[in-house]
Image 1 (spheres, rainbow, N blue to C red):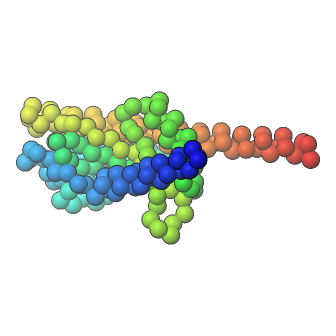
Image 2: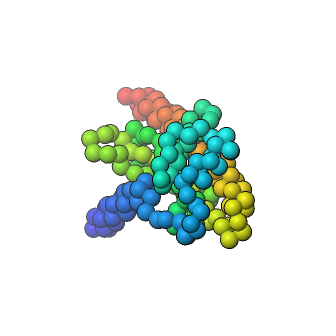
Length: 188
């Protein structure tokens, strides 16, 4: 009975994760400060040296340098915050990447990761990293630009670290599976 109770809560949790992920992707909030526009964000991203992949009136899509080359959605959002989001494809299903996500979220507090379903018909899941940072808009555009730069750099560091963290975890899982297989075949 407790197992069924757990499964019911897990389904609710997964639905909540999917809804939050969808809200993040759609950009539900608008900034309060009128000069926080996507055009300004695009200008700043170029000044910071990021390659612009796409931009519209709400968000900018940048590509990180380095071996991951992740695409990152960057936008000004509600309460004058900066919202950043990227994702990794995973062959895992359901909560298969749960240990990676939980390990990361317990050890690192600045960039959170969640698990989201891929669109219907696609196998696996997405691990989604997000970061929201309030901006000091009342201190003016230059203070806001500097906080934006620091936040994007922090997120970029988080992306590179999580990429390595997840790869290291997958390697450890493969080693554990190989050791278990070798131990079980020893008794056959």
